[in-house]
Image (cartoon, rainbow over all chains, first blue to last red; front, side, top):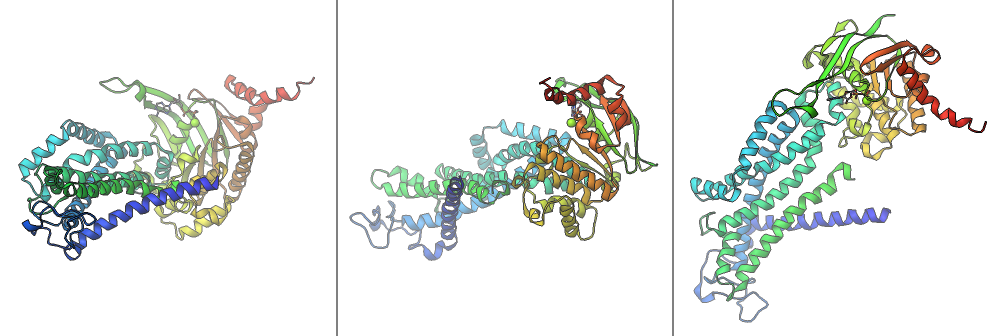
Length: 283
Length: 267
Ligand SMILES: Nc1ncnc2c1ncn2[C@@H]1O[C@H](COP(=O)(O)OP(=O)(O)O)[C@@H](O)[C@H]1O
Ligand SMILES: [Mg+2]
């Protein structure tokens, strides 16, 4: 019996450490890219085009993951690409979370006309198809990092608002809320001190999930060339370029794709891992 | 004796959201239909009634979680029936409630210390952590429970935390709504004798709500029987048990006598 619990704990711990470890690695790459990248990510050298990764025939020393058709170093470009991926993940994820969770919490706990207004807003918002909405937004705002972040926040806050609203509403029906009122706690005080700790685990899971989604959205927008100026290396941009020459140089496509996949996976697992580790109710 | 609590002509109706039409207001469901009684300082009054008779609604109205539709509630001479939440706040320390289900009434993500100290901090009680420890001692929980979360305790222990939270504020009046119904028989007995002792030690006035007369008999000086939102009996305990007047009382009495039918099956 105790062993089964310990096993669950160890598995949960492993999930947390693997996902947190990978994200720490990506963060280190983003911060230190200019110093640890073996080459200039933009430097072209047509004599070094389409070099394969280090374990294959016909490589040049120093180009670990090979080069693309313009002779740019794939590893250096992935390391530099981590910057934009992480900036978008952290800023867009956090902003989406703050706006969506706050509105959801207010609607679900205060109910009444506040809920009426916020719920209508959510309904109207969700009627827009998100992909069309984002492309439209970027067309209006013009491509660029800020536009991507705004597009993600504007489209995805409803994801938080809906879930947090439902959760806050369920928690609001519990007697500990009535008890706080009997003790003389104000409505807002009750929302922050009693309800918030109980929706926080859900918010954390949603937040890290959203960070993963932000990385994908940025990649998709780069892929369709709506993201950053095409010079800055991004994972989505690399995937788009790699796709055209996948038969001659698969590594240009595969390495950024795997990095992207692992990062999104790590973000989605991080929240669950944190919840398993730190939620007092699961201890 | 002076009345600590006086209820006159109390009516309460709530919108019945289950039967709300698509457009327009929900029909109101009339739950308390003219309730009059008073509770003297130091008295322990039992409020009994079948399920759905309005006991919990009455309890919540007494501590002004609900606002009466008509009638008045006087607490220590002051009319609190329609006071705003802000005006009630300073008074709230003086009347407390213990809830039926501690799984729901204790915040699952707070520690016992946070649960008990929260209300103390709100009322600017000095040394809340000393008070919290005192309250834990008073309900027979050791200090090691201070750092636990509700799910790490048994049902009886949780209910003791609910009691500790209420008494830590040193209120004058407590309403306890079916606080032992969720417990097994032995924890029921323990919690009841604990309550009995605390009431005597702290000079509390208590409204003890239950659907089970056998629980009430041992604790209460006086019994109020509620049936479909009206009081059908209000008399000293002995009188209610010996010469019940209302049909609803006899029904409740019959339901506790039922087990004794099994005791003489051999004859
Ligand atoms: N919020 C509510 N909305 C509609 N009906 C309610 C509400 N609360 C209680 N009632 C109804 O009022 C009656 C009395 O409920 P309650 O006071 O909980 O009774 P008791 O505690 O004696 O079992 C029940 O019929 C119940 O269905
Ligand atoms: Mg009840």
